[in-house]
Length: 364
Image (cartoon, one colour):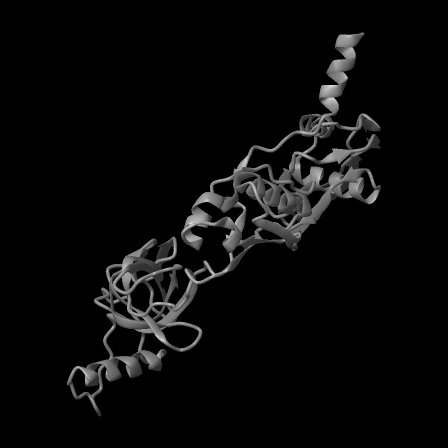
């Protein structure tokens, strides 16, 4: 009896999550990147560029570029097919320094068919404040293939978009006095009071004093002065590698388009009975040809013949799903119904509507 009672107690215990580093659970206030965008020109395309008659902005930027290089093209009529106007985007990482390199993404905005083999001409990249923070230039690596003939065209992937690895050079730094901070906030990527409380406890336990304080479900603040270390950077080196067990809400996520169902480990279903059946509509077309007699003046006609029927598949009646104490038991109970994933989504919707699904139900 003692062994059986101990086994039941173990089954009733919740499943503990694996310890996760704090750096993988939070964002540090101020330690963030910045988005950059620019408008440029790609040259060297093999006849797959913009049609300048349909994309006049390409001709405009090309004319401006040539004039800056000392080439006078005023009044000239030129419509090459080896250039394309593009948007260039990049992300300036935190603490990026002048002279460093970052990746750039290039996307066509005209009617260019492919950027494969093209070269991006020097393009300034601006931040949200309008200032230039980087300059991009280099050969584009496109991820698609395009081929066409006189009457057909085949496209695989997206040849009108590509990347330039390390193709942008940082020219301006984002001013941020990180060393002068007196406090720092940790923003949880998934706000949760329990997780924030565990982060606070883990930090204070490691330092042996009150360094961290939970403000709400998504914020924990650090008193950098109370940490008594050389700099805020040294504090974060110590804090970000501490591990905690994050707490997550029970959640079921379904994707109706692909039939994907994802369940969290804490999902529970109360004892419920489910019946699921299908109706099959069958229509058979057997047209009949009627011909006149050999010497009669008439026409051959086709008479439609349709057979319509509705069949209901025989099921097993109500199937009982017992209350699950673990994710494996819940999955085993749902699989016992023997239905397809799309039908499983409908069943989960019905179980949720009946109040037997104890989890957040998300449909995408």
